[in-house]
Each structure stands twice: as C-alpha cells, then as structure tokens.
Length: 366
Image 1 (cartoon, helix red, strand yellow):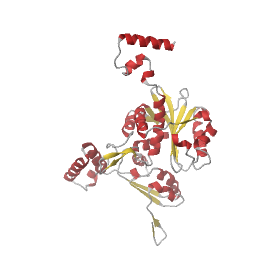
Image 2: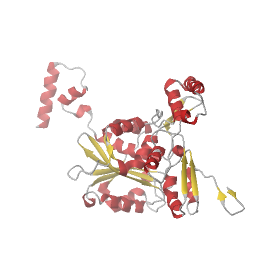
Image 3: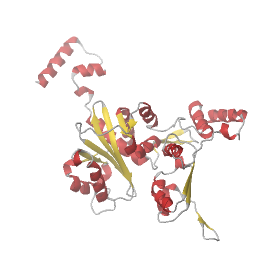
Image 4: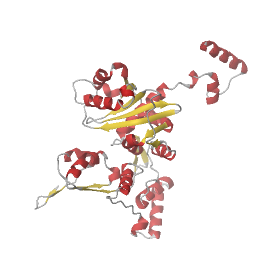
C-alpha cells in the first residue's frame, strides 16, 4: 500500500482476500488477470464503486468461458462500457514468423494438444481453446450448443418434487443447487451461494426461494454433505440440527462419504442429462466450467484431486447431487430381463436359462 502526499492511496490486494476492502472507499478498482480472480470480489465491492460513482477495469488473458467471458459479453452489450479483445495479430508486437516460432515452442514443450491450447489462449485470446484439466467445461459447452442452458428451463408444477444438493466450506461458505427430476434428465432451476451467512440465515434464505415453487411445498429433500454433522457455521448446534429444526427431519438427508474420484465420475455421468436456468444458475455454471485439476508445468501431470479455489465449492455441491442421483438409479441387475438385454448387461445366456429367468421375474412381479 502506498499513501500519496494528497492523502490518496494505492493498494494491491489478492482477490481471495477481498473482504479486507469491505468498508473502504475506493474510487477505482483494477482487476488484474480477472479470469483467475475470485468473482465474488466484484460482487461485494461493486456497491462501494457505485456509491462513489467510481470505475472498474478488467484486464485478463482468457481461461475458458468462465466469469471473465461473461464480464466481456456484458461490457459489449453495455453502451457506457468499453470492451476490446486484442490478439497478437491485432497488436503487431510479433510478426508472423515469430508467432509461428512461439506456437512451435509451445508444442515442443507441452505436446500438440496442450501446446496449441496454451498458444491460442495466450496469443490469440481464445476463450474456446481447450480448457485442459477442466472436469465439466466441455460437457457444459455442449449443453449450451444444444440450447439446454437458457431462461426457459423452468419449474414444472405438475412434475417431481425438488431436491437440493449443497456444499459447506470454510469461512461460512456454502453453495446450493435446486434439482427437479424430469423424464430423461434433470432441470437445475435455481442456484445460490455466499459466505458469511450462518445456518439459520441459510434456512430462511432457502425457504424464501422455495416459496416460488408451489408456495414452498415442492421440496422433497435437502442433501447436506457428509461432514455437515461437524459443520457449525460458528453456531452452538450442528448444521444438521439447525436444518432439521427449520425444515423437518424428513426433509434433510446426509450424502454418504465417498471418494472425490467417485463424485467426479458421477458428475461426468449426470451432466449430460441436465439443463440449467441460465440467469438463476450463471454464477454456478461459471464455477463449474472452471472446476478442474491443476496442471503441474514441471512434472507435466495433473493433480490427483481438483484444485481448491473459488470454483471448488460449486463443483462439490453439484457433484454431491450427482452422487445422490447415481445412488438412486437402479442397478442393471435389478432391471427386468428385457432391459438388461437392451443395456448389454447380459453377455451370454442359453435359451433354457432365458426362459427360466423370464418366468421367475414374471412370477415375482405378480
């Protein structure tokens, strides 16, 4: 922090520590490498800028279609904002020969796929370059192309009950996804997240959101993470106790403890059957796109677990919901024989065995 002779100050703060600026009065904020910053920083500091009639400047290299991409698109639509994308071809800093040499150097260093992705990202400002290490980014991109991320994804009052999956992190951070099962898939109709909110406040906040759906009578169950028994939100009672008291014990479930790898696989399996209400879930979607493994530039390998940053809470909250879905799905051996054959779970069976098993299942149904 530098204080000038006229009383003005200039200060550098990490976006993961933005709460240290709450209560200050900046006239302007520069977000450097915005794509890598915590998007919550802008949410909590924006009212201060608005009150001071100040300004915000976002400078970044693309990192896939995350919150920096949506910031750019919003600025392009806003007449009073300025937005510009300049590639290495536009700036004229490098000639064609140098750019080709740089591209080849990336390929030699990181391999064809990763090298090209890094080059296009760093030199060509590509938001569509492969987001290597990302867990769900490609799948969400397909959902967007298929038109399954839009504001027409809505709650069906004649459909199934809603269930909510959640993650509770440190510093009173929490995220919530509102799921409605439908024929062939799932509609994620709402999302909420925040920090510094205790369990009682979350109960009230979620209850208010649920009032939009059958006057609050659409809730099937809220699934809390397995460690919610120990999470207290700095309260005297466990999170589970507080939620049971507010919603009723029959409306609260605990997600069984499994490995992170199992939850990641569940998320990859379920995401293709989902659709999202874009406006309600935009922040959650941005974080799901950014959720991924960290690449070690020296060892040339990915981390064994997803990196822990501002995206991981949404990744965990969504994957807990996917885990519940996978656990509720019938196993192939529990399906009728005809469906087993169609699904390929019966590899080889004689005609005698087929008749015997068929009559056994018919008798059981009766």
